[in-house]
Length: 110
Image (cartoon, rainbow, N blue to C red):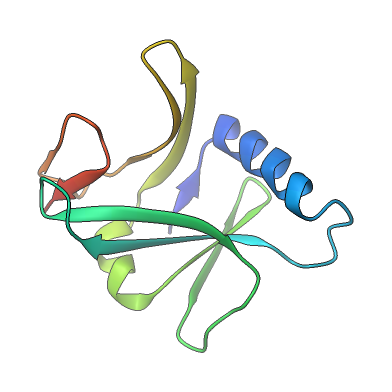
C-alpha cells in the first residue's frame, strides 16, 4: 500500500481542481522511482489520467495513487506528505524502505 497524509490529500485535491475543475477527466496521482539523484534513486510524482495495464492502484484519504510494479517494490508502506513550513514547502515521501536519503529529500537508497 502507498499512503497519503491528510495534509497532502488536501493539497492534491486543490491541485486537481485547478487542472480539472469539473472532475470529469479522472486525474490521479502517479508516483514512481527512477534512477538518479545523489543517493541513487529519485522519486517522480505527477498527475495522470491514463491507466496502464500493469499499474498498481491504491486509494487512501480519497486520493487514487497509481504506480508501476517496479516502483512498488521501493514504495511499499511509503506515505506521501506535504509541508508548507518555512524550512521547506512541497511534497515529500516518508519511506520506511530507504536506508539513506539526501539532504534535499528527493533521492534515496535502499
